[in-house]
Each structure stands twice: as C-alpha cells, then as structure tokens.
Image (cartoon, rainbow, N blue to C red; front, top):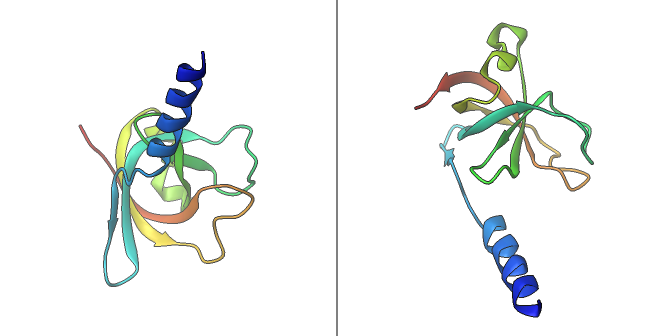
Length: 106
C-alpha cells in the first residue's frame, strides 16, 4: 500500500513539471496546445474555458473575443495563441491567456 501511495505522489510531482504544448516568443505572444473545455466548478474564478494537458490537468485558463467561439472547439485538441494576462495565476489556478487565434490540431 505504501508503494502505491509513493508511486502516486511521484507521478503527481512529475506530471506537475510538464511543459506540454508551451511556446513563447519575444513579442509577448504565447502559444499553448491541449484539449479545450468549458470551466465548470473551480477554485479560481477567471476565464470561460480551460486548456488541459493530455492527463486532463488544467494548464491555461482562456478568454477571448466572442468572434473566436471557443465553445465550438470543446473536446478538441487545439493550439491557441495570445497574450498572458498580468496578475495571474491566482487562487491556485492556472495562467490566464487572452486568446487571439485558435486552430484545431490533429
């Protein structure tokens, strides 16, 4: 039983060190990739959607112009590009990205 607990803790720690789908440029534009979903119950209260890594861990809270229709990409693997909002993360939440572009990836 102790071995299972130690294994679980080790996997959680290693999973938290991942940089899944992270790209940054010199002009403060960043790109993130992952699976998009609507934010449900959370400990943080910002963003309308979240980008998660392959394990389902929320990596980036997303907000964007209504013309982007982030909701139409729910459950899809996407790459989003935009700028990180200053002052985030808060309340143990993820970073917060103002999305400028979104594209589906296969």
